[in-house]
Amino acid sequence: MATWTTVARGIHHRRGGPFDLSVVVIEGDDGLLVVDTGAEPGEGEEILADVRSRFDRPVRWVVDTHAHFDHTFGNQAFGPGSTTDAEIHGHAAIARHFERYEGPRLAAWRADRTREPERRWDDVRLVAPTHPVERMTRLDLGGRVVELRPQPPAHTDTDLVLLAPAERVWILGDLVEESGPPMYGSGSFPLGWPAVLDRLVDEMLPGDLVIPGHGAVVDRGLVAHQARELRSIADRFVAAHDAGLGAAEALAAHDDWPVPVGGLVGAVERAYAALDGLLLEEGGTAGA
Ligand SMILES: [Zn+2]
Image (tube, rainbow, N blue to C red; front, side, top):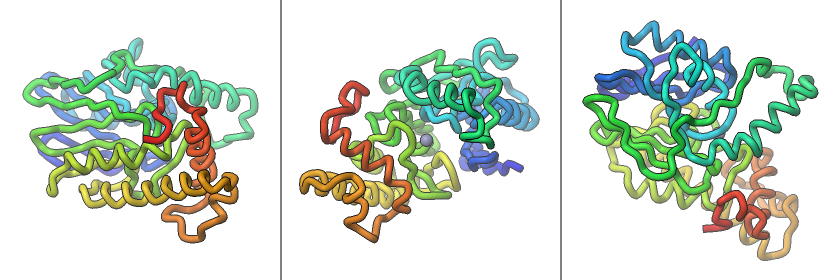
């Protein structure tokens, strides 16, 4: 059962589904903008039905905060060929990220469903943005403007932040999380992520509202706190690499990581790959 909260005039936050996903609806005079679409086509349909039952305007725009499956595998319920036929906006690198990560993951699941038996991916079509966003873009919803701000590599190489400038509401996707620790999922950039958050914190005002990819609405202070945590993790990875420690040794060198150490196994490997110059072709600046 999903829960809805109105966070500002015409801006509504829905939490629900298997991943406690944040879906955001922003009302404009010309229609609705929906942020993120769920982890499978069925969830996308459910979100769409829920939105239609609550609002009498059509969904005209969808924005993907990043490429991960739990945010995009419902795109087909909203995009071209659907009854909604909305524009889908997202970071310009999402199509490439789909090719590199979500596509192979889907293919592996179809070859052996016992790997992830809880998924319902029979009908998934990877629907990349119809409107790839390369630089800061303003979407006019009618009576309201929303900024789409693609970010440098951080949680993924496809992170895009939304800002409703009049209401001072930020939508950060998985750049921050409230209901769990920050998640280093597929294709993360552990070394670049802290600086991306630092720059966002610099732009935020004390009363700004921040909607995370999963969990309750937070504030600038929580974003700054997660930036410090991610910075301390990145600094330790760099120091361990400089000292010639292997990835497993880097994790074993501390017993006070700010997030569960199990979630850092992939992160340290990604950090080491960046430090060894192996991620440059993904568009990630290795460290900065
Ligand atoms: Zn994610």
